Image 1 (tube, rainbow, N blue to C red):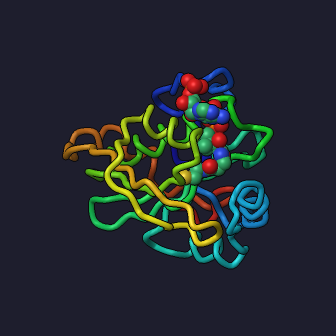
Image 2 (tube, rainbow, N blue to C red):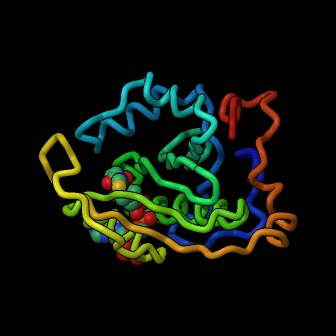
Amino acid sequence: MSTRDEKPPVPLRTGARQDTFLVAPVSHFWASRLVAIDSTWNPKSWSRQLFERELNQPLSRVRGLFVGNLLIGYLIAHVVLDEAHIVSLGLAPEWRRQGGGRFLLKDFVRYCRLEGITAVTLEVRVSNIPARALYEAHGFAAAGFRRRYYSDNGEDAITMRLELGSHRAQERTAAGADFRAPSTKGSPHVQAAR
Ligand SMILES: CC(C)(COP(=O)(O)OP(=O)(O)OC[C@H]1O[C@@H](n2cnc3c(N)ncnc32)[C@H](O)[C@@H]1OP(=O)(O)O)[C@@H](O)C(=O)NCCC(=O)NCCS
């Protein structure tokens, strides 16, 4: 969808509270909130500058999960040609285990399909059972192993990959408008959106 005021054209029935969730590109307005959510789970928390950089970075897609006027989660991915790499994904602790992570990931996979992206990759800590379960449930498969990838504790990473195949044209024209950059007028949520 292009703005947080629009309903998704195809409702995503993925969790108990799914009808309250909305995904939209994130604007600079939410930089502090992104930092706050990230600091709840990331041992190497991102600074505001790092999030600002992502928000300005043309290759970056910063997608937010909203409930009402509140940002409760985010997914950040880099898109290079026909591949996307998820670099961060997190929900505010009080909103976990209510279907939000599933909603956000499902939305991103749909976005990728519409954009003609053929594969999505990511790294996840070996110990991160919730995230691994979430990715596996969406078809991601282990593709490799990076020893001592995380510098905070020397933990290994599993690399995961989701193959989407190629299927550009029809889907893009049918529903691609939902993901186009919205008008930035009138809403702090969607400024500088992509
Ligand atoms: C990982 C995370 C995004 C999942 O989001 P969530 O909203 O809590 O997950 P959902 O409620 O949508 O659950 C979706 C699926 O994820 C898995 N999952 C989520 N939390 C889980 C947990 N605590 N234990 C095991 N599996 C879990 C399950 O497969 C679940 O499906 P189910 O409900 O049918 O069992 C969330 O836990 C989070 O923000 N964690 C901290 C940040 C993080 O680890 N990010 C990943 C970096 S790679």
